[in-house]
Length: 595
Image 1 (tube, one colour):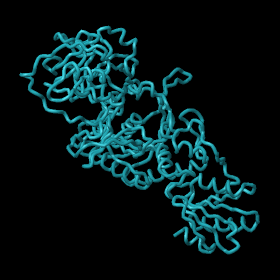
Image 2 (tube, rainbow, N blue to C red; image 1 turned 30 degrees about the horizontal axis):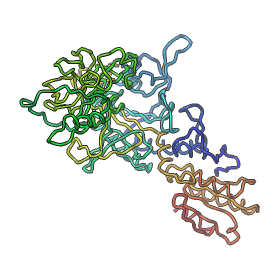
Image 3 (cartoon, rainbow, N blue to C red; image 1 turned 180 degrees about the vertical axis):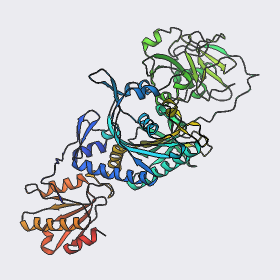
Image 4 (spheres, rainbow, N blue to C red; image 1 turned 180 degrees about the horizontal axis):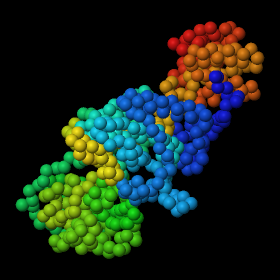
C-alpha cells in the first residue's frame, strides 16, 4: 500500500531543535522520525519505526543464522536476582529503582543477565541441553546523569542482548567467535564501518571483551590503533613497561627550595634554572605529579586515592573509573572526580602543588603505610630505579632524585593516564594513533560469574553437577539508527542507504493538473507491485519547493519527480545520495528502479 504524505502522521521542521548538538539528533527530529518525550527519552514516529524495524530485521537474521533463539523478557524486574549477583548495588546511581504498592523493590532493567540465567536454570539440567544461544531485542533503562546527542546516549534505548550457555570454556570460545562473526556481518549489512577493539569488561564482569566502535569525530569513546593491526579502547590499553634500573650507584636525593612552583611548567623552569644538568634540560616527563582523586563506591562511600604519574601525562578519569576498583577492593562501578577543597582540608599533610610520596627525610606520606593512610598508586612507568623530581610535602620545596623503591614505595600500579600519539602498541605492532568512535556493540566472555551467583548448574557427562559458562553480547539498535544518520547525511538532510531506508522511492508530484496526481498514483502502485515501497507526496496545497526540501530532508534513496516532463512522457529520477538526476520514460521507470 502506497504511503501518502497527505495522510501520514508527519510534520517536518525547518529549524534545528534547541537541545540538539549532533547531526543525527537534529535531522531525525526535523525529518519526523522521533520526538523528544523527556531528557534522553524519545517517541518513535511512523517513519522512524520503519527504519528501526529494518535494523532489527538485519540483527535478527544474523542472530538466527548462528543458531540464536529469540525470547522476550519484561523490562520491569524484581530486585532479588540482581541482589544475588550484587548488581543492585554495583550499578549505583545508574539504575532506575522503584517500589510497588506493597513496598517491594523493582528495577527497570539495564541488562538481563540474571533473567537469562534463571530462565535456563528453570528449564535445563543436562549438558545434553547445551549449547544454547538466546537473545532478545528489548528496551533498556539507565539513569544517565547527562543524556545527550539524541539517541546516542539516552535513558531509554533498545538493545539486542544475547547470551550463550556452554558446558566448558572451549564451548564459550566457539560461542564468542560465532557472535563476533555475526556482529561483523550485521554492521557490514547495515553499511556501518566498525573496528573491533580490546575493551574493559566493567560492571559486566568476565574476562575477554571487545567493543565494536564506529569511527566518527563525535564519538564519546577514544580508541587507539596501530598500523600493525592493534586496536583498543584507551581504557584497555596497557603500558609498555620499561625495564627496572639498577640504583646502586644513584646519587642521594636532595630537597631543594623551589618557591612559587605549584605547576609542572613552573617546576620544570625552576629545575633548569636551579639544578641544570649536563645530560640535557629537565622536561615534564622527569617529574612525578601526584594527583589526588575522590573515589565513590556503589554504596556511596567516598575515599581519597593519590596517583603518581609522569608530569607530561594527564590523568584520564574514565580510565581511572575502569581500573581503580581492583586495587581498592571495590566491586562494581565507581565514580571518580578530583578531590575537593573539603577533601584536602581533612589531610593538611597534602600541600597542593607540592605533594610527594615522602617528605625527603625517608618518611612516607602517601601509601596505606604512610602518615596520610591514603592509598598510593603509580603509573606503570614508575619502575624500580627510576629517579624523579617530586613534591616534598612542604610549600615551596621539591625533592630532586627521589628513586622508586629505594626512597619511596607504593601500594600498586594503575593504568590511569591519557594515551599519547606515538606511544608504542602493547603487542609491538608499531606506534599508536588516537581516534574517536561510537560504541555500537560489546561482547564479553562472562565465564561463571552469574551462573555461580544464581546456581546455574547442569549434570555433565559423568553425572556430576557442573557450573555453566556464559557469554554476553550486546548491540545498540536505536544507537545504530543514530549512527547511520550520522554517517549518511549532507547539508540538506538524511540520505539513508537502501537497506535501512523507510521506503525505496519518494515520489513528488509538482503542478496542479489532476492528470499529474493520477499518473503518480498509477506509477506508485506499479512500483509497489514490483516489490518497492513508495512514499507519495500528494499534498495538494504544498509548494514544489517545500516538497523538494522535505524529500531531501527525509532521505529516501530514490526521488521521482512527476511534473511538467510528464507531457513528454518522462519523469525525473534523482539519486538522493549522489545527487545524480536523469529523465526516464514513464514506461521504463518500474523496470529501471526494480532492477
